[in-house]
Length: 463
Length: 83
Image (cartoon, rainbow over all chains, first blue to last red; front, side, top):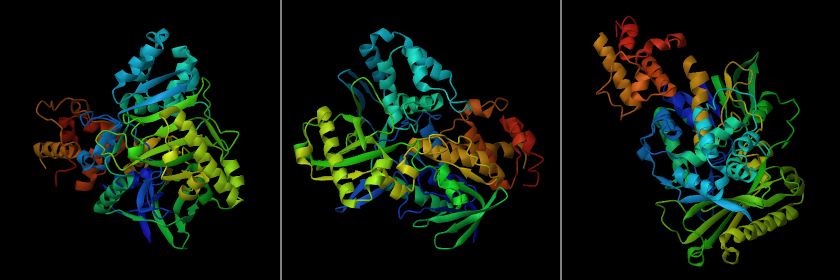
């Protein structure tokens, strides 16, 4: 068979790209290897309960009137109605550097500003200088790498403050160790601090179902459990794909959202596999559930806590299996407008070393034991910050970088992908383009806008 | 299509992109983008809708002709004379 537009990867960037094209040319086919759509933001069932895989919070919150905000631009581009969704804003979140200080922030940027001026009075008007700079800075103009860390230190003159500002931005979207590109910093600063965080009223499944239904209404199709074996190409033109089943599908345009090296592997089966995990950041995440009646002492008004033990913040591939010195604590139930459930969910995230987990996995018993140890140790770290809960856990589940690799096929289980981004989406083919994580926009809104903008730039003008 | 019909068509397309678009004080000789808070992504939608509805292929170098409501009418009139 032949389709004008084929998408590899049914994560949010692939779905957004497929919808965008289908609005103008319905013959769109999206292929997903896994049995469920969503990519990093999917779901699974245990004990008849739906658990979300990746979602902590969605960044880039904007009210309905702010037409130029990424969230509203995205909805317009996909022709989705804002009232198809109910958005629940965060209460407030916090950056906690234990033994130093903490900074609260919410969807009202004034809170963050007053926290900074209250706790770092010596910075004076330097934060204003940063805001003026960011207000005039266009992060989408291609520029060579500029260290956001150095830049912040220079403008703020305070290492602790610079690290505290960077901590959430790195955890929610840096594929680079201990630093991020200034353009990425500018995008993330706006997405997290100036715009803020929210989540849908229902689950990620509801969002995915809505996107798929919308795509189908426009005439597009999705196929799940449909792995691509290779991309067939000839002299710089992609001809189509060969599926694991042997079936071949031809196409005029191909968009891959599975990652740069992951796409390269499909283009040339004989080439050496890219250096697996090299320079990529892996994570472990644990979901804990405790009965609400045992959790009344836990915060009800905090949504996410980014913590670091001490003054020195390291965001890098840990030397051990997991680095517990810093992490993210998420209360998925602590958003405005959500009803309290019988069980309180708490999630923890830490940096993890893919290669060590991989080596461990040769021995299933050891691997399982380390997963158990990780969830316990992580739980104790969390208790230092949020209060006791581990004695009342009724359910817990941990993902390692291997779990993420198994379900998303991301090399090294690296959720933020390749440290080097391909901003223009081109990889040397005239009809094959890259969108999603490795193109460089991160987060749910970012990755969806990535799908949309690559389609706008390279495909729609030629369809 | 007459010049007036083309202007209606453009406004209809814009309304479809942004149902809150306010045309009451629209100046037909001033850029649509600034007056209606449209960005380049929305602008591409106008081009794509024209293609979808009237099979019009507008080359990228001609996009500036679509800047104002009047320039849209001038540019599109010969292209849509049989529409």
